[in-house]
Length: 248
Image 1 (tube, one colour):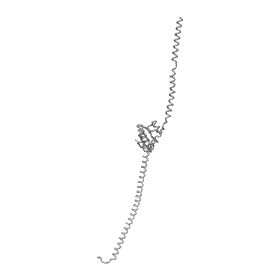
Image 2: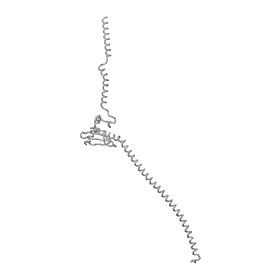
Image 3: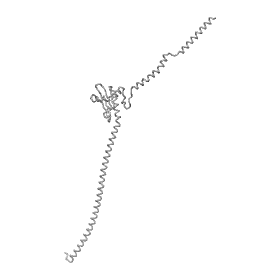
Image 4: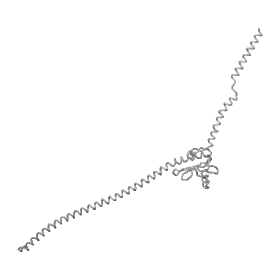
C-alpha cells in the first residue's frame, strides 16, 4: 500500500513538473534577434531620411526665372551654369557651327546650332541677337524638343513687344491721319474764308452797280425830260423865227 502511494505521489510530482515547464516555455519572451530587428527598423528609417535630404540639398534647385523651357537634365543644368554662353560665342567666332534652324519673334528668337566634329547640338534662346539661354546636348531628339520649346517661348515673350509695335504703328498712323485731316480742314476753312470774302466783295460790287445803275437811270430820265423840254423850246423858237414866212 505504501509502495502504490509512493508511486502515485511520484507520478503526480512529475506531472506538476511537466506542466510548469510547459507554462514557462509559453511565457518565454520572443527571440532577441527579432526584437533587435524590430528596434533597428525605425533607426534605419530615421537614418535614411537625412540621407535623402542631404542628397536633395546637394543638388541646388534652379530659380524659376532661370529654369529652362522643357526642363533640363541635371547634366544640362550643370553645363548651362558652367558657361555655355561663353563657349558658344567663342565657337561662333571660329565659324565652326552649322545653323540648322532659327525662329524669330520680334526681338526674341531661338536657334538650333550643330557642331559636327563632336556631334553636339547648341540650342539657344536670344533677345536682340544676345544669347539669353544656351543648352548643349548630344541628344538630337532632345535638342529638337528644346528648340521647339525655345521657339514657343520666344513667341510668348514677344507677344507684348509685337502688340506694342502694332499699337505704336496704329497710333502713328492715327496721328498722321489726324494731321492730314486737320490740314484738309484748314484748307477747306481757308477756302471758305476766301469764298466768304469774295462773296462779300461781290455783294458790295453788286450793290454799288445797282446804285450806279439807279443813279444813271435817274440821270437818263432827267436828261430825256430835259431833252424833250429843249426840243419843245426849239420848235417854238423855230416857229417864231419862221412865223409869217411861206411854207412850202
